[in-house]
Amino acid sequence: QVQLVESGGGLVQAGGSLRLSCAASGSIGRINTMGWYRQAPGKQRELVASITSGGTTNYADSVKGRFTISRDSAKNTVYLQMNSLKPEDTAVYYCNAKIGLLTVRDYWGQGTQVTVSS
Image 1 (cartoon, rainbow, N blue to C red):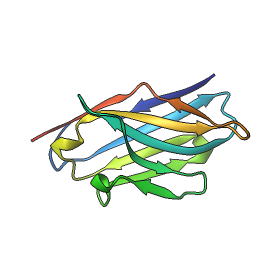
Image 2 (image 1 turned 90 degrees about the vertical axis):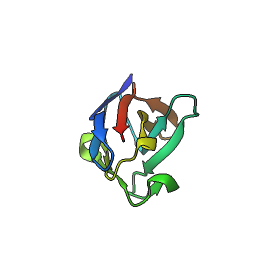
Image 3 (image 1 turned 60 degrees about the vertical axis):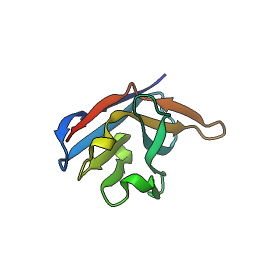
Image 4 (image 1 turned 30 degrees about the vertical axis):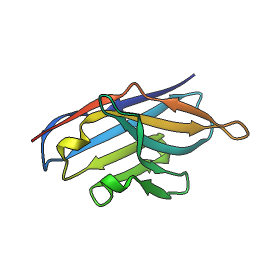
């Protein structure tokens, strides 16, 4: 069993910052890419940012220059530093980990709410 536990969401004013954390535990094995997705009401879940085991990052255009993803492989933890937050960033943020060597499976956290007030 693999568990992803997120923390760090909350309510912040526009222009503010939040830092999300996601720690993986259990029978982890090899963690490949870790990432953050978000889902706003009435919208599809979308990729926010991802980071490979080698440190290569990828960002949605809407967050480039404002969000930074990082990971601590020793702690099986991924972080999302969110700066200059906008009301349109309001969503439930989900941590994702792709785990496995020959067979890669997706694991998801329970989600953490981020609300940005104008």
